[in-house]
Length: 125
Figure 1 (cartoon, rainbow, N blue to C red):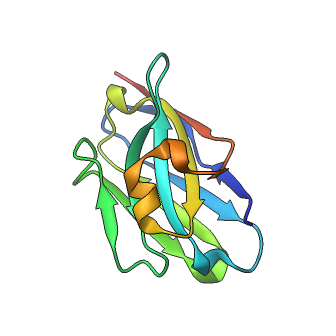
Figure 2: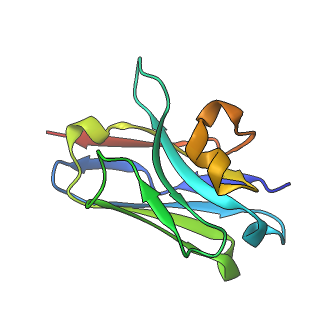
């Protein structure tokens, strides 16, 4: 089973950009589909983006479509979330998650068992 560590969060002004990274341990990274989720204060965790095991398929929440891009580099055991044109409502703790099935990442976050510790993104207006 992989272990995940996110990085790249921080404080940015509205309209700015950030790139989050999620580094996975182990040599089986390509066996996992990956997803990004976020949780704002007082709100439920929500899906942001997902990517298939070899990057051929990507999926996005409507709220981030056209602004965020998920990608992965299996040679570096890392998945990325490029975030552009950030808005104050993007403020949240961002988590990456892994699962052997892309469908499970898309279905419901409650069924996922592999998570990173999260990285905080704050967007000021």
